[in-house]
Length: 473
Image (cartoon, rainbow, N blue to C red):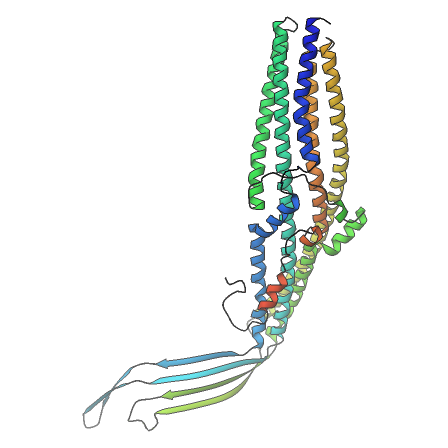
């Protein structure tokens, strides 16, 4: 073997080892969990579930919705009002004998009034039903928001994991390209290649640096998004697996499950109940109402010229109000409520169609990522073999520098597509679970207490008084 051939073979082996070492380490991180302490995807989901401000805001909104029920129940309870009036009264009287009599009086009155509605056209009962349906609808909206936050957390996690892998892949690519560039310069000095080969190697190094910069920018953005969703900056992340086993088997089963379990559909159905019951609330304005009022009072006068200085009163009065004509307000409110009920039914049908479309899209995408991942793995395997073959042929003088550079670029692109396919594969499985309506803490078996909106509801439902919330806020 000549000195030139020996040099070529040695440089080819160096370039091959320079490429393979970082790439093997890279994909070891993608496929297997690192032996050091790493944060797993379930752990990141727990942090997002506990601290995400969007989800906590939805929980606060739901706690506010819970208060609609005690407000409606207040219609069953008596209204008690205490009153107290006191003041100074200056009096100046001119008597028949032209004498003037003046005095400063201090009258005061204290009273207590109790109002109790006995019948108001079932307005209170229907208002309570409306409030309870609103609470149920709000719970489904909260569950749907929780699904969105968990899916955002999965996406943020996988973006960071893929971004880090892409940066490492591009760094390894730049290292190999620089090795090829150095080898080409030495071969140029030896008269084995032309300046064109050197320029081609230099151009590929510049492209590799540009690709590395783009990967680093995307990685930095992914880390900031992760901190926004999860609540803290990412550290060492472990590889994540799919959740296909948690979704129903088959497209028909997926669509069937989503139609019965998806929170958007269930929430829209409760909104229909709210609208239907609101019609009865509006109709109560056309019905008579019966109430009773009990009152007791004491009035004290300090005018000594009066024969009575203290007056005590007590009364119980029943009142019947029968609406005859209110200018058309109640009739208009009833017609309006009926139109709103019609709208809510149309919205329910629209949500069903949107959910069905989302389920089919998620199913097809999930199945497609399986094919894409297999193809990407096969592409990487073939591209790696092709690169090794081109290098051997280049070492034997049968291939040019541009052939090696092209094969190197093909392998880099294949590895990048494999990283993206692994990312898409995990996200697609979670997206399908979300489309079905099962992306929650219990299904995922996350190590965190589940937020139960029913607890706050029962704490405030029958509260007759008090300004402090159960959380102390």
